[in-house]
Length: 411
Image (cartoon, rainbow, N blue to C red; front, side, top):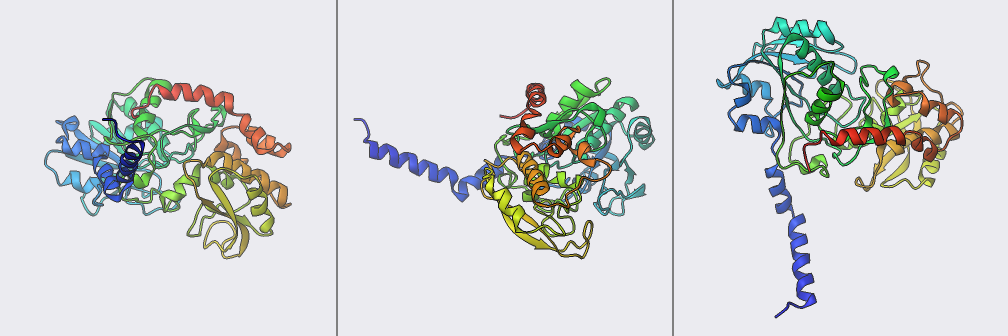
């Protein structure tokens, strides 16, 4: 006998509720294992017989918040010889644009080498001097082209190749999902440490996927590369589904919500407005002296998907407008699946320029380095609206998306 329609609907509803219950969510979280967790669970087999060095920072932690360097150093199955620190340092003591320099780690006694702003042969010489055979990389990324850790990955891969070292990448989630690549693609003549190679502004990849892409598409010659993937991660998942603790990857990335908006609102680094550094909501608060309620009203009039804007006043404790009360907006993302951070960032630039007569780009045209070309700046200066600016990068983005697909590792 066939079940009634009511019975079918009841069963389906119960299944849906069960699937979204706290218990079901906890079960999914237990199923996710980072690259490090899988490496350790497998007895560190890929590192057998190797003198190991690791590129990491405070985000290289276990889910019970022990640092993986401390864990590996205490494990006789790993011959850990050196640590390599990126921007902000291995233990995270330096602010933006700083590092910790060469020192010995007080907790383990391991030598810590500074990789920040080093590349090519000088970085290869550091790897050689350290005496390691294999360089491991484990740093939490936030999904934006101008977040420098992915270029530390790129530089270290190239340097490892020059030094004749193996390279192993331990994967972690892209905290803002890996659903799609968004935004303009870097033009090579604008390459800097906030963008070495032509990838999209929001790349939608994990570090292991990026390593595969870098190795095949951009390195002069490939490095001997091994990636230790996650298990249980899906491209649609935001960071809170992972069950992993959020450790700020840098001082102004305090929460996953910061990462959600960062690939769009970091563009305000290229203007004379505050991007919220020096507040408790960096990259969610934006403003300047003389900005008032008209900016939030203009932004809300665009009805951008997934986000609303609140008129806001704040006094940054450091960085732009330090100690001065300024006006601006706060982003409130109410539907993160619908939210497009890059389009939103462009819309905020367009509306800020229209409602505030004091708007200006940074004199060094830093905005061009962040967007990857002069096109966004020149189009906004010419009076283009948000849709016109976004349309300007679609051809480049389609090319990158096609290339990107070849290197994706997860559903």
